[in-house]
Image (cartoon, rainbow over the protein chains, first blue to last red):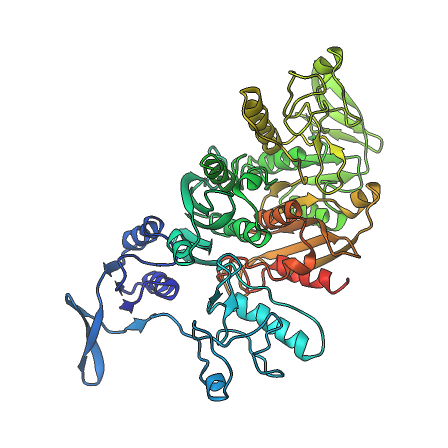
Length: 295
Length: 295
């Protein structure tokens, strides 16, 4: 029994099912994995259902039924679900209480405010990792992403500066990925609703392609969605859901976001091609062509 | 029997061996796949040998022995090798004779000279694909890469311009990849010897990493070599050889080359991470850290 269908919920569900355990997911949002758009997230939910999982969306956890001190059921606002084991993946918040108590500035994300050197607003006090916030390089707003990749990079920068060296952590573009059985999902930059929240005008395209040359064994499905500025064509974000070899393609979009590239420029990216790895037009480039056609 | 151990030779060798055919490769260069450096290419040769192929390097084809009009053996400058079937993968040259006969300028690469619009030096005459040359965006020199990805992009640009639209093909960074059984090899930009030929000062680093989190099933080996400018740290090229999931990582380097990024900037690229896909520090970022440490 899993409560919350984000990254942790989906990963736990896959692995419980693989061990032969009956899995039910309860999620209060109308979709699994809200960090990607509903249409793409539905592919992951379908995969999980196909593999034997049961998913209840738009249901809120209300409590537990116990028997002899052990959980026997989970109650939601709609039903009672029997359960022997309950895992709650309800999201994360920065634990910045220590800094707050010490009078160090906390941002509106709840994370400790740090500069590019990972120094807090009090000179000589440093912070890095999940307790801090980082600049989102697309929205230019502070965000709190509790991800190991970000924490590792921030830790390196803080360490170099503390030891008297010079290093800067410019910020993040919000890349994340997850595997759900045979499907891979990844996202970077802004979703359209995130762009709207940040006051950035956006448009989007979605294409369906193939992970490898169509005739090559194992060519799987891949869906690529791009979010871009309708005037300049600047890439604002992207989402990829597909079968083997789909997910890590997000790195092209992440790198392009760091470089501030436009979808028009990206059409001619000289990406790697060989039939076992990609069609001659990588699905990302096909999406860029479609996006550029709308500008 | 295969003559030539470039992309085509290696791909043919793998597929003949998979069909139970005894394969011998003869290559006049001292390594297979000269488009990557000898140390990395040796990994591919080892894989091919392990799977039952036989490789003779630094041997030149001298002729064939025939019997009843059919080939029976291949003679090299060192030995005679029995053969029932001979495939020659000896490289490609642009077939630009038609243009040459028409008085259209041919570049020193042997390819037809075209501008960004894919127009030849004679207005109203267009060319695209393997018969043309393209600008290498790192060396800023014309090159002739006979690759389907380049031809497709050039064809699109030529077509748009011929039809009265506006499109430009900026050039290539020389990305290419190949699969050899369980190993993937990819390259982009300049090798150190290519940088030298172009009069560009370069340095390089090579790291060994893992394709996935170390504890995750199927985490394979990956070697990443970066070539960069020792003064500015600008990325000049890269090569990747490794197991499943290694090869397409070349796209991050290709995108960074298009954007003119430095290895220092690349350290903080927000690349996708999840244990099935990558360690928290993607091997590319580890290589960037090592490279940046040398500047």
